[in-house]
Image 1: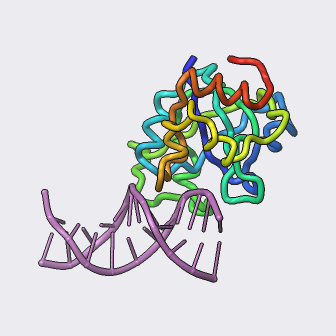
Image 2 (image 1 turned 135 degrees about the vertical axis):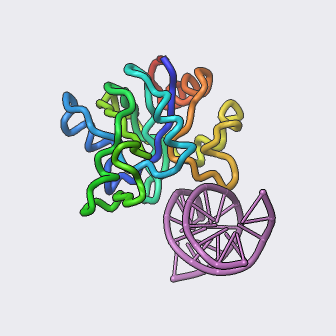
Length: 156
DNA sequence: GCCAACGTTGGC
DNA sequence: GCCAACGTTGGC
């Protein structure tokens, strides 16, 4: 199983939205960055994903979800009414992909950005690098364990 | 709302 | 293919 971290604005789609309907898969749409998209394409069913809340009051890792469907064309790219509409994406060769994810758990407490920065074991995470803007990024097994341990939970 | 960082666009 | 302009991200 591979591990990932995905950024989201909780006002739009946060861990609470997954928790609210724990049986329902949510489509992770709207990724419009090529590097992040390429990571999305390599996700497989069962992969774990740390949900990171950004652009909000409580910034940090808030929970864990799991991939239930690997990459498929992101429908919002063809929807003129969607904020993610991409008129330049060819219908016969979709530019952007989505994956489906399902709730696993909320962390007992949010792991703040400061807390993450305080851990030497996490210093290499792209998330913590200066100027980083990647919205989907790989997480090493060691980083994953570190994060969950900090959160007071079990490992993988 | 500010601003640094960085990706994308488009003219040449 | 270069590079300036522009837009977006995201913490503060």
